Length: 372
Length: 246
Image 1: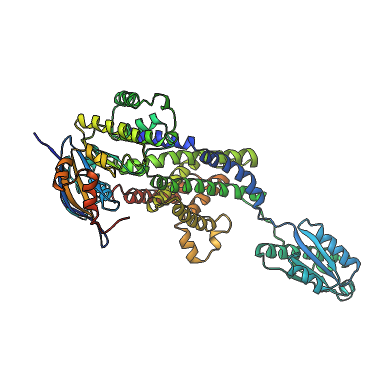
Image 2: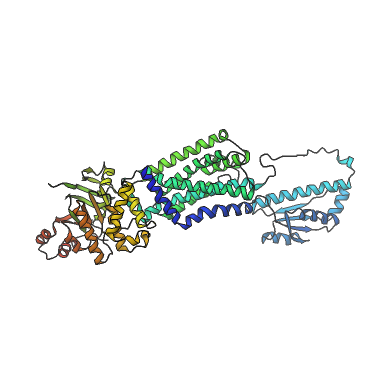
């Protein structure tokens, strides 16, 4: 135990003398939590819309003003030629073209029906999908309105309409920040913990200080614990800072108990730090460690369920994400913070992460060789 | 009564087809200053790393402080000190912090740590530098400090790998004073060097050529044997035949 005390003392002295690490721990999580949730917005706004109006009628004007006043679209072009607007899409000035045919108003009144044409620039998939859907729903709305105006009410009562009202549980106002902030915090904790630990032992290798350690009678598990504990504490500090920002800035108060949240994050940190230390024992230079960690981080984060739902991934990807510790943290964070889940609900995830922690740290201890 | 603290028999280390250390056998007695000479690439560092338990031998046997080199590496580590070629104290810790860290790792009691670090600092004249980061010290002081840290826990043997490389003659002289002091306390000193004047300070020296020990005796006996006036000449005579260099 005394050995560990000396190791911890040394490790903390080095950390507190390293300004870059202190900044990383203190400023990075706060800044990222302030900026990212505001920028990484699922809602699509500012869609550039080109309108090709062959009709120039009262109805076409009404439709255009309805579309632009929705707030989702920006009128980026208005002309009478489809070709011209297609050029705008090609040069990326426009995302959507709405073409209003000649005789739109006349046709609507005389024939009771008309067709509109929407062309979507599908390069940016999300923008195209949502833009197309928004526009369709605005046009449907417009359709209802003119039917109301033009047709006596008894006539369209004949067509049965199922109207859907929905209520969003656990996040009633569908504030995407409620959804994003816990996820981003999960990633921050993972990144800081993972990188700090991955670079640490390998740094001692690079500087040659590990030789001086290896020639002492120090026990391998003492050495690894001496590395694990400081970063575990730092990880919890980052996590607390994040929760504080979430509360002060986004008014996100965990619906569940803090104890459950910290209980899980503590075990999770052991797992991710063990992973970093394991990488550290494999590498000879910080550069190698950095690249390997980066590779895993990309996979962990992109497949962790923050940006895209794991449920909609193909089967093989779902299988892969079972081995992705980040996906468990994001899931549990959302469960506890939004839904108020308790120990019983998160038990499966907690068990799996605890297994991760044991396996990774044991492997790191075995793979750290004092003799080669 | 003579006590053997290092005993190797046909100790070898191979890296693939390359034989870095080729069946070396020798003994070192307690309290001796044993010089381990050889050209660059002769296998000195590899041999020393095996003796320190940092590297596993490919074949042969050895006992350090009476402990088997294969099975009892942790006991060996408790009984030796090691100073590597590359400076390897923590540059981002102060002089005092380095001393107490390594003393603590070797299991010295708090009072012993306090007492020893005070004595060490006074002996090296580092009173004003105690709170300085080690990285800020000049090389000569760093070397003296890392030697002192290596013998802080009073090991039976201390291994020094080119301890005076790149250090000025005055500091080298001071460094050897430290070595003599340690030797007087009964610590066996196992040292590699490229300086032939330092070789003269040793009780016995071995000269390695291409992974083998080509000569082993006291400096004066070697000079007689090779009919040479200086150790320089002895070294040239032997190292000239070397097939590998750096």
